[in-house]
Length: 219
Image (tube, rainbow, N blue to C red):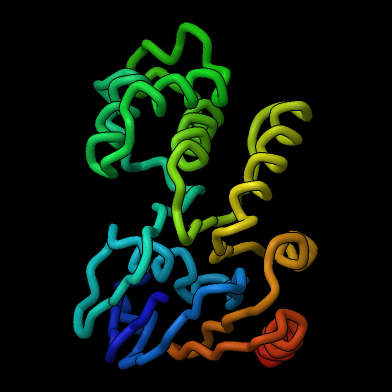
């Protein structure tokens, strides 16, 4: 269970303050994966960071019952001066998982070769994404947060990533941001629409998609 209590977050966009969420009390239950929909600039990625705990609220609080991942599409948490392996060791200590197992898992999964032992600042964006995805798949979470990415790399790597990810979701949930309705349908059963600083939950994903599409028509 993830619960927001009187949560408010305001950001500045082009010099103007905008409430991403405005005094929101809301609960995301366990047991169904959720697609997060909203207009461009509505604050979907910001909301994922709030849920993950990497961004603080202005007011209110987030209650998490269960282990929540960082946003899988976000690679900014890596320390550029450390190698990929050193970053993985650091994450393992923070999350209390077996360091040796996670280091070996990511080495095999991410397929970075010698770059695994090179500073992350030398990585391409695709290599960082593969490292981030590998670390995420190597740790068991109750909730996986996904921001516009479910796999990276060549066709074979994408197929491998999708297979592993779907396996993780056999007993975990995902909260996913994607502009692709078909991608949301592949992974999610329910939906949340972020509109005007408020969140509305729909038990059926198709209902959420319909509401979102109608909102988009009222630009």
